[in-house]
Length: 140
Image (cartoon, rainbow, N blue to C red; front, side, top):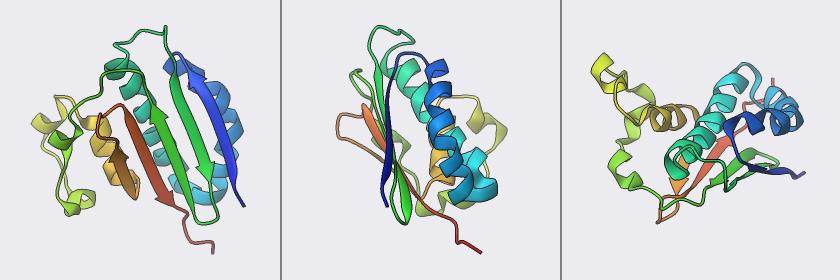
């Protein structure tokens, strides 16, 4: 089974419309974690809009959400110049990291959220496209 949803987003508010289509899949596959998964997708869109497009809405952000048999894959691409995502690479124990308040004042909070919630977060070399991957929770 493969179900995909694609959208061109000009402003983060545009995510509301496409979210109506894929949100039932989040509830079904991630249970109580659907809000965190949804927050990670939203954060990827907001980062692209704010940092990739400088908050401008002339060019779209491409969003593709794909539900496969065992996992969800989200691809977010903006038309910006990208960023050096390597500065945000962290140790594999990121899921257990508890930040100091000072760590939360700067940028990068969204990346921390995505790293903690998703199973995998990858960027293309340029840094203008991210790939979020999350396996479905066990069906009980």
